[in-house]
Image 1 (cartoon, rainbow, N blue to C red):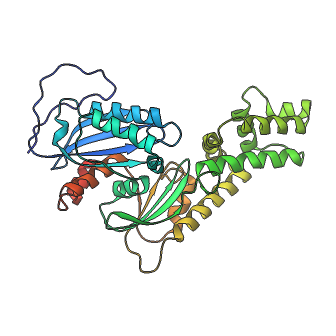
Image 2 (cartoon, rainbow, N blue to C red):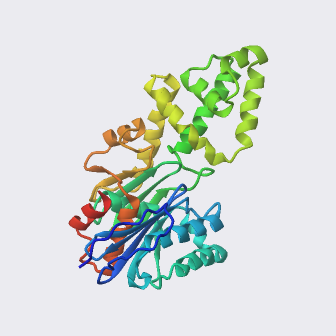
Image 3 (cartoon, rainbow, N blue to C red):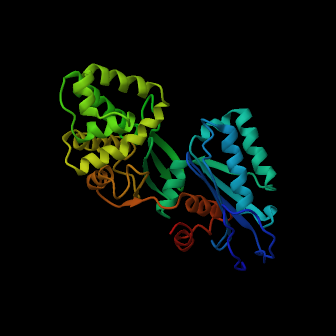
Length: 345
């Protein structure tokens, strides 16, 4: 049984306070993404008793800062608690393959032990966390479409097969990156053909070259000059930043821009094809959709939901899903629907 206590503000500095500690074992769930790191501590009844948050924790690009953010979130979540009481931990991580490098693994291990934790963490992929956040069912399919894209087949809460997820250079079809890249390519094609830019084209030029009036520049300087500026600017930035153009595609879609509508339709087709590579007639369970591109308000997500028959659910709180899986690592009887509702709603 746990005793309620005020949850610490993850962004606030620690303060001296008297707390009533929970009795019994604790679990830890983590969700480490490109933009945020979140940690939850819960008791064996699924009651959240600690939270911590920091900046991005994806170790692929910046492992040192990701590990530091991980440690910051751990310390915040464990404030006022005995870290040795944590007896099971599941941490979902985008870019977790980077932990195969000894130097990166050592930095994350230092952050973990530096928080006083003694239990070994179970690092899993973001597909498993997304699926667990969307449903308590043990089997099903999960599709993530955000900056990148990936799909997975889940059996007994474990990932058994994947499709896609090969990164922006080799895959990520239908993702936010794909939408952004294809939007720029459509603009370059229009400039090659000396065609006027529609709503999407104007939005893309404005986003990449904010100090330029796209149509005036094309008329004054020539289509080739504008095209060259776009190519030069895009190639000078990290490729993943093309995903920042996805909202422009969605906005142009709402304005009935012909190119945007074609891109949204094609993105949905690519994502459904990726997920379909995993499904067979014998597969059971729901499909869980995660990521901004596959969201309920996204036209891409809406088209995906129309395509698939059966139960299609939306991923919720990823760190809640990881915490729920940690309950299962503590005791197979604990990850029940009631605890799932308590942790992810």
